[in-house]
Length: 276
Image 1 (cartoon, rainbow, N blue to C red):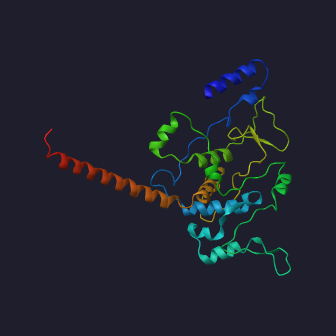
Image 2 (cartoon, helix red, strand yellow):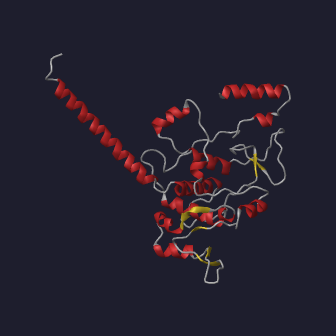
Image 3 (spheres, one colour):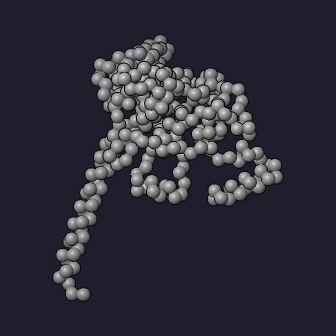
């Protein structure tokens, strides 16, 4: 199918019906696979990395992106105490109500609340971001992924590769380029990034840079580290029970292996008494 589409695109370019930019497949550059602590059948989250990622989200990303499916109480899984979670939640203002007068009101957040959106509605978000509504970050690490195609996806079945979303996010955050090809039209307020899944340019300016944040644990504050930390945090937000799922999966595989062996031995014993 892709071959047919490429052929039609080439036909259109030859006769001037579409441009080279319109015929391009996005992303222009495929994500480069990265090493993650949560990859593989025995992968686990690095709580220190998740805490750094939460800091980056709160100090940078939360000004545009919401996380409306993540409650403050979920942060206890990152190693925070109940008191720390309550203090963090109280730093946010959450809309509640109606009160006895039938009016909505603002109050400090509590652990059962979810991260509030920085905008009251999508229309306000679009006006503030050149017409583009910033996506919610709750499930973005699972929702954004680049197809790896044949035969790579066949090998992924055996290697249990499931980090396409994190790989894409990391490459996007570190993939902004200043040298723009001649055929790419970069309008004011947009930025060239060949790793973007929906085109060659996007409305989000480069959100991360070296020495942007100060890590209390002494981790080097590089662009690469910032991108890895926020990506790992977004993966946790999208799949907080990943570690439990992998433990269950491993136990199931062990059970099936033992069960299969017992079935085989039973079959051998039963049929060994029958003449063939």
